[in-house]
Length: 79
Image (cartoon, rainbow, N blue to C red; front, side):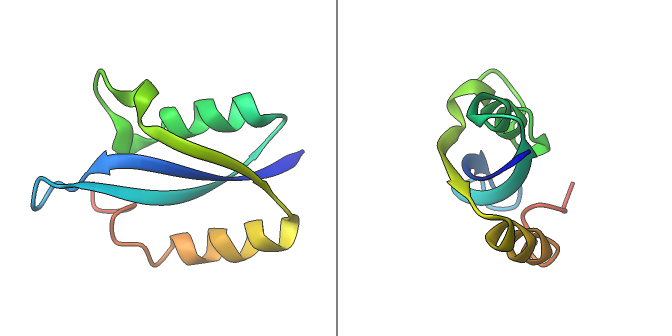
């Protein structure tokens, strides 16, 4: 498995502005990481395919740090 950092454009529910969030995925290849980003809960609607801005391969250490930081991102868990 490889590790990827994915930048995703989505809408902030509270002030209706577009924001960019960063998610960290473990995937077989870059296409699977892209699909995981486009199927993220914040990218609902007809524009989900255009929501992924960038997919970058990273190492395991950066993945672990990033996943732990995701827990503190208020935009990821306010459904």
